[in-house]
Amino acid sequence: MIFDKDLIQKINLIENLTNAKVKDILVKDKLIIIVEQGEISKAIGKKGKNIKIIERVMHKKVRVIEFDKDPVKFIKNFIYPIKAEITVNNDIKIKVDDRRTKGLLIGRESRNLIELNKLTKDYFNLSVKVL
Image 1 (cartoon, helix red, strand yellow):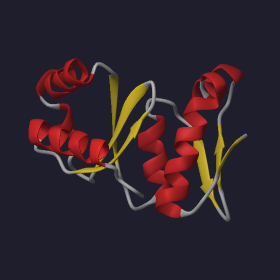
Image 2: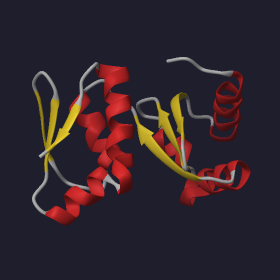
Image 3: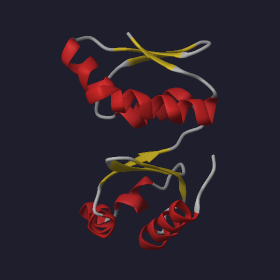
Image 4: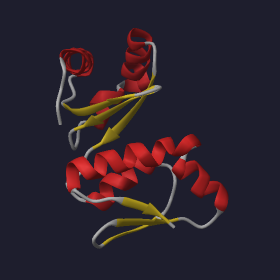
């Protein structure tokens, strides 16, 4: 992962606002913040206070995800609140029951799937397939 000056400034700002250790940030139409394991409650704050502050400062919607060394747990954190059956072999397979849930998982123009694929490739060197 390569961090440019702008990304480092964003990480520092978020860490100073929340006191949570930030592992990674994805900046697209929304801000996806990956925090270290056990830091999610610090990052969110009481009643979502920290999220609201970050959204106001960054002018973007914010999503916070807790990192986990186990790829299955990390994916469950990423796709929460969607319930799915996740298996890991040479790649990661996510099985969902109905079309609506599959659509939510993949996202408009496959945004959610692209983001998940990027993160799993970076952290675990695995690709994701939705069944």
